[in-house]
Structures are given as structure tokens and as C-alpha cells.
Length: 245
Image (cartoon, one colour):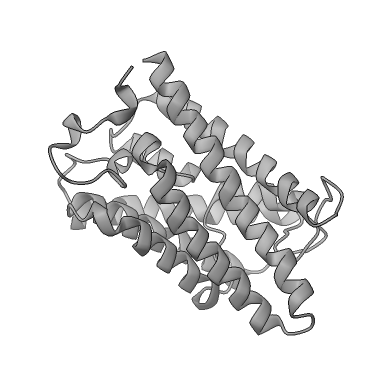
């Protein structure tokens, strides 16, 4: 069990790290390729992030379920889909991986490994945007899990995040680990540390509202977010490749 949890936590570390590398790295590249054209920069950032997210979920999902997001892990724990021990390991791996991902992205583009962002993001509209982005993400993830359509989850999640870059005022951070990590890069995708608390609070609010909504729309608790990427060939309890010695 310890070895299994270590593997799953490693998958979360790697997956979240790659996600932040994609977010920050594509933001830096977009700003350099299309300077002064904010719409095009955002499109490039969104397209790269959405596509990378699909691939990352496919890669690590069979091991950990590809939560890659503390809100998903917390809601899954609240639904009884995982243990407190698992949740703590996932959360630590996600925050650590996200920070490493930002450092890697900075380093790839010749910047300082850690450059604290000066990009203030504040205001009621942005905060509401974070709540909406997180609500929608949770609804997509758990709605697919509970309606037994896990095979399309990678595409659905990637598509949602790519679209939410544009239809939310905040450009859809929707992830506390990613939000904190983006303070480490003073680039297109960065966020000032002073702006983080409000973003995370509204992400938690959006997640809590989503959890209540999911419980009403999909009352079947028999599947958890750990099964998001596992092919639906047999029962959820029978498909646990990470438990194999």
C-alpha cells in the first residue's frame, strides 16, 4: 500500500509539474512570438495548455487518476473516493510538482529559476471568474465519472480548460497548486503573491458549490475521481493498475 501510494503521488507530482510547465512555458513563448497582441498570446497559451492537459491526463491517469488539482482531491475525499492519507500525499505532490514546473519553465526560456511575479490580478469580476471556472471543471470531471463516460475525460477536461481561458474573466486558473506556482514566474502567466489568497478562496467556493451540485445531479457515489482516466471495462474496484506489485 505504501509503495502504491508513492507511485500515485509521484504521478501527481510529475503530472502537475508538466501542467505548470505547459502553462508558464507556453505563456512565455506566446509573449515572445506575438508581442503586443494579447488576444493571440492568450489563444496560444490556451491552445498549448489544453492540448498538453489531454496528453498529461492520458499519461498519468491510469496510475493516480490525474487529479492534478487540490480541489479535485479534496472533493473526491469528501465524496469518500479516497482516504485522508491519500489526499494528504496527493496535495503535497501537487503543490511540490507545480512549483518545480514553474522553475523548469523559467529555466527553459533563459530566465531566473524563480522570479516572483508582479502581475496583480484583483477585483470582484476576476474572483467570480475563478469560482465559475472551478465549478465548471469539477462538474465536468465528476459528471463524467458518475455517468460512466470516463473514456472521454481527457478530451473533455482539456477542451474545458482551453475554452475557460476565454470565457472566464480570470483566464481560468481553477487550481490552487497552479495558482501558487504561477507566483514564481514574472511572465505572461504569472500572478502576484498578493493576489493568490482571493483566487484560492473563490476556487474553494466554486469547488464547494460544485460538490453540492454534483451530489444532486449525480447521486451515485459508486465511482470516484481516481477512476477518471481508467477505461471502463470492468468494475471500478477491479481496475487498479497501481496496486500491482
